[in-house]
Length: 267
Image (cartoon, rainbow, N blue to C red; front, side, top):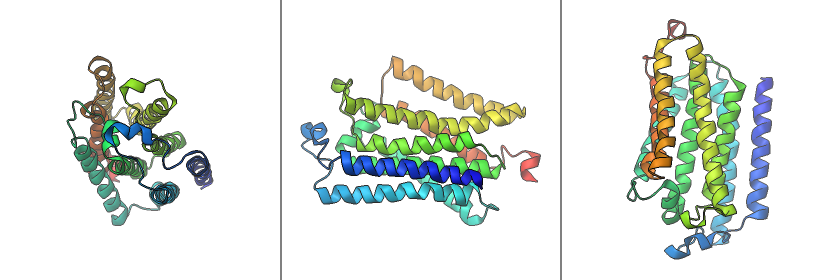
């Protein structure tokens, strides 16, 4: 439980930093210029902005609670299992439906966020919570403990809240602080969120479990394919969703089927 203090401290620091940033440096009309072409504003009033600030800070406080109740659970109960199935399925469904709100070949998730800012915020919540809780559940189910994995996933999910609060400025304004902040934090979520899963898969590969070697190979191949497509084809919602879909499939197979269970796990 000494490690739990480390995780609480990490989330406490990130929560305070996020709260100070949103309350002292951000304003409800800070990035309305990003939506002027659409004649929309991110927040209709300061009251709505501060309501979102309170709600998002409350969400930050839930993450260490998830660590305690899932990662450090004495045993896996039906309630814990149901909760994680729910977050995984709902996260996958929401990410998929959101990616098709507009032409997924022409629009990215961020570009759709300029048209649907609140739906983009929900995308952040569903994505972050589903990946975070199910990575913890994967560790707990397999009696696997890894501080680096938990920390990576924690930082990645926290970074996602910066992504949705600083909207994309569009391809014409790539080298601006706004756009760099948006893209860099999205990349942090993608890399560190995947890292939490890969760390576990690599651990299983070191135990020379052939099923995990095959699963890891597929997961890494899709991540590499996404990078190739980003360079050759460019960004769009389908390419962005590829690693998310595969991550959800991997988490579902490991967490809620017996396909990857070893004799030790079953025992």
